[in-house]
Image (spheres, helix red, strand yellow):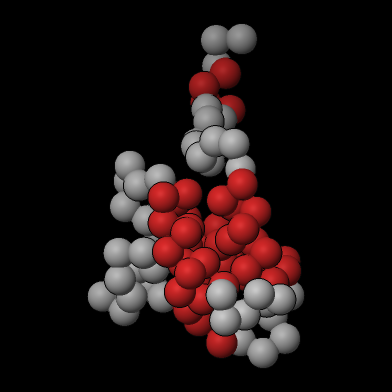
Length: 89
């Protein structure tokens, strides 16, 4: 395992190391990170540790903003039914 339980693929750590990374790129990294978490893991439970680990030393980094925004969200992201779930309509 490249990372740990909070950042299994070390995606968040690596994003903080990329010079000139944009907010949009950070959002993509965040989505990849969230999708790489074990099933049943609430990403919001992990965000305070990631912010403490990385965000405190880089408050102006775009990833810090993305992580903070993720923490403020009202509910966790969940998959919803796609077109296959609408067959009976």
